[in-house]
Image (cartoon, rainbow, N blue to C red; front, side, top):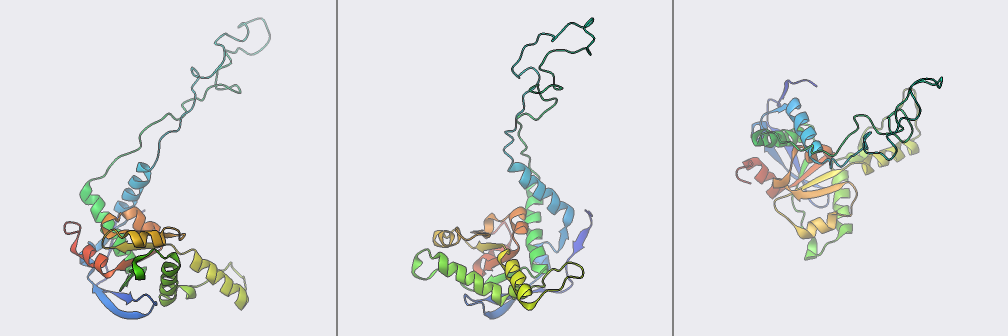
Length: 253
C-alpha cells in the first residue's frame, strides 16, 4: 500500500439530501478541507489494523512438551535395539505430544495516538463522500415513537432506489452472456448485499430497536464513528443533525 496521500478534489463535494420516500429534496455542498482535505491510505490501514487487533480475545493456548500427559521415561535404551534413538513420548514428533512454540494467551491490545485515530475517522468519512457512497436523509424519526422494523426497512429500500443502487453494473465472467432475467436477478442480489451505516446526532433507542434486526445495518451516533466501522459498511447515511455535528469536528461533538 502506498504511503502517499490521496489529494481531495479541487472543488466542493455535493451530497444529495433524501426524504423517507427516497426522493431528492435538495443538496449540500461540502468542502473536503472540513474532513482533512486529503486521505492518507497508510494511516487508514494502521488504524483499521489497530481496531481489529484490539478485538482479538487472545485466549488461544496450546500444550507444550512439559504440559501434555505422558511419562518422561525414555521409550527404550539408546543403543542395542537397532531402532533410531528416541526420547520420551511427549516430544512434538509423536502423536499426542506437545506443540513446539505454539501460541499462549496474550494481549493484542495497543493504541495509536488519539489525534491520528481521529484524523483517520474523518479521512474514512471523506472517502465515502468522494466515492459517492454517502447521503443525507432529511428525517429518520419513526412515526408514533414505537419501534417499527418494517417501516425502517421500507425507508432503506426507498433510499436504495433513490440512490439507484438497483441499477448497479452486473459483474460478468469473460465471454459470459446473461439473459435479461438473469441480469435482473444478479442485480437484486447485489442490492441485498449492500450494508448500511446509519449515523444519528445522538442515541435514539427507538431507531436502534427498529434497525437492529435488519441484516447489514448498523446504527450509531456520529460521535461514536471510527475508521473501521465507516469503511466496513458499503453505504453511509447521515441525518442532517449528524452531518452538521461531523462538520464541526470532534471537539464540538
